[in-house]
Image (cartoon, rainbow, N blue to C red; front, side, top):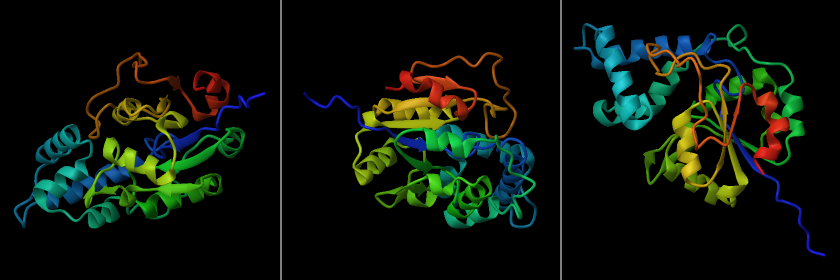
Length: 242
């Protein structure tokens, strides 16, 4: 009799606002650092650029490239390592990290391999995962420094990066499930054939500068297979991801 057992999935978990509440304190701190950095770069060498100029750059590059950093690299010659180090220099994370209890139990219950896939830098994401006590549940940790394709930085939602990731780990797209809070990243993954889970409980604003509020009702787009408030709801929704 043939073996009809389905292959176990490969989970790609985002970090910020997926596994922890980055909107509580971490994102405001990163945003403040980013504003200061960009104001210096866009200033005249003596006077930093105004907040309106900084906001326009952050929002414009985010819309055009999917990440403000890519615009700063392309148009202002910013060093990505320097940008990431300065913007994610948050000091001790003890009072900043906020997350649900039971995440380790959740990850143990989910069948299959887990990969952390984050647009955050390695030093920051490693520290957050250590505070969360979740590192040992992940087979791989893919941070933004590992997202170069053909010599260029290609963070989420880059389909080139996702294809390369799948090839590197020898896994078909249909076996992968991306768990994310960012719709653009989920849309890109869905186009490649990955299954998608949208985590919504930590969402506060719909743009990176905190000006555009979320709609009252967060409707599930077609490219999202499962919408959950919390990742803790994943075991109960597994049947919808088969």
